[in-house]
Image (cartoon, rainbow, N blue to C red; front, side, top):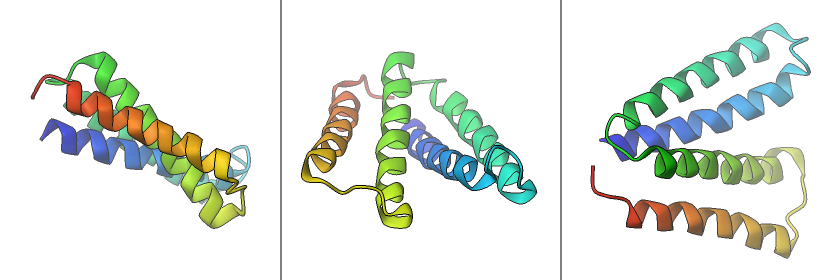
Length: 107
């Protein structure tokens, strides 16, 4: 269950970052509220995962999901670059997160 919480926490981290972009420096109310809510949920789910997962592994996977997820959403929604080297780097983040998950002690 801890890995499921961690996956959800990472997805809410993506929502947090996208909400920050939409909030335009916290000048727009509802995107600001959504961003803060996503951040709170993400941190809460991360704390649940940390009850059983090693902190280094969990934090690395959480930030990896967030970084790769935001990069992918940026490509899909904001016309950010999808250059092959950029995609390779996103793939390396995903590979690192998967590798850490595979090598972590079972929770």
